Amino acid sequence: MINLNFNTMTKKELRTYVIKNPSDREAFRIFVDRFTVNTSSEIFAMPQSVTDLQEIENLIKQKLEQSS
Picture 1: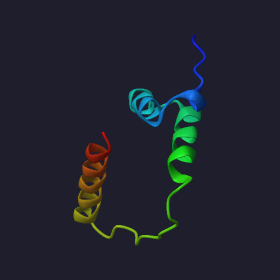
Picture 2: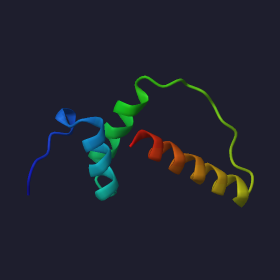
Picture 3: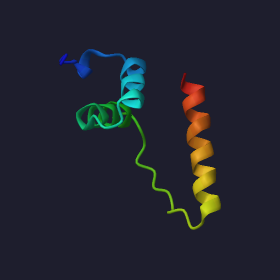
Picture 4: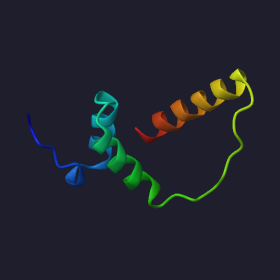
């Protein structure tokens, strides 16, 4: 097995790795840590319906497409 150094990966490389390896908890933790360092601590209300969940999913997909 190859040991990967997630700390030396670019954000794009790490994101790609996490998407391809969703069960790798260490990579996911580093991914979240790296991407949340410079974010605001804005709080959002919990989704109240299936429609709300679908809207959130669509917004996440749009954001990911923008960052590609």
